[in-house]
Image (cartoon, rainbow, N blue to C red; front, side, top):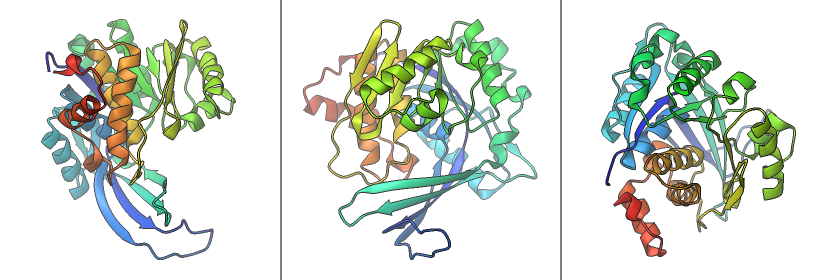
Length: 321
């Protein structure tokens, strides 16, 4: 790669406890599962690992508990090359966990349901991010999510805004977002469900995505990317919209980290100078590989894997060489 994208991620670390089952249970019902595993996850950590695997120079800020899950999650970040100097251990509270249920139908179709217990993620303080007042200009882009205290997101976004560093806000899981926060975002990226929660507009088509995006643009966001699963993504700004189709996947093994993979790849490409269309395409190829594998961080591809797939399809990869 000609240069390294410098990306800051302030966000969550979650140990995923993954159960596979032929069908989700109804209320009051017990079903027998078919598989169980653990995997390091959390939206912030997933995005950090993915960006690092794609060649970015990544720094992560967050908190874990003083427990084995915390040690394992920090080790997973370090193994991917993420800078963990600003990850703190928190006494008296557990690391966050995610109860991930995968329903795997006989035809291989997979759906997921996830419950997150936030634990140490909600213990991030302004002291943890105070160093950014002096170091924010070291970064090309900041990525935030909604699995940490909203006041921390607002403080970091404002710090980045004042230093002319673009901010990507992954508005997940769904939560109310202030106009103050949105006005400091260069990009927000909800999925169709989160977009509906934020705007009141059901997102069933690309045209719906554009209408919902306009509501967010009117609240001060620079660009809106609505991810639509197998339908790809729609990027809308004041100049128009780009409808970027997903890369077809014959078998979706686990969609758990697909959105995180997409966002990290988009931000990495953008920080290297890619235009929106190229960054969306790179993100779709990255997410395509992710959903074909099990687990959150174990499913995330390297830059070489993504580029080989793109090159196979005749796509110019010179930006990343």
